[in-house]
Image (tube, rainbow, N blue to C red):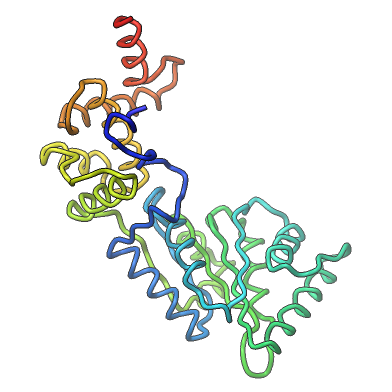
Length: 290
């Protein structure tokens, strides 16, 4: 809608993860470095946590792209599973045969696959996203998978990505053994003001914008404050603020556009069926002009 107005080739602030728009803040890069070091070192469990929208999935996807070919990876994103469904999902994502049968049959199949990979010199890594949704019995099942080993080393390394409540869950008495096996912990933090500015400029540049004066300094400060430095929230606010500036026929986003964008998100979150501003305003404006 505003892409043509600002001479963009695509929307710069879509919520859909896109590797072309990858931006790593200091916190993102530190988490990724911890992950790569832990996996290269053959460490035990690795846990990465952060609040909603801070970029855990971004780091996860970056990890998958940067791991050398000697690593075989399986990514589990649906964590509302039974124990057998989890084992089936892991086998399937590794590209291993998935037998029909009991839980033991599935574990035996996974063990055979891991041994075969070890003989080929490959190191299997299981990555679980949204791990805070795993029930304690399922987390215990994940811990037991780490028991698959040879006399020399573990056959499977495991990485968990989750919201902050994952840490609380791992402190439960029944998960004490799991918590004690975690050798690398990383937390992803929100962006600071400077990183927020760089993040916005980066995404606008990838989308085809010329120059860097997309927001006034006042708009930038307010956007950082309203978003609290959370990339998902930054995307939502920027998307609507750009539309607001487009509706005003403005050359850049001003503070008032961020105010209206934030108000539209708040209105939309309350429900009630009304079309959130500025979409409603844009429609009315077009209708009045015709």
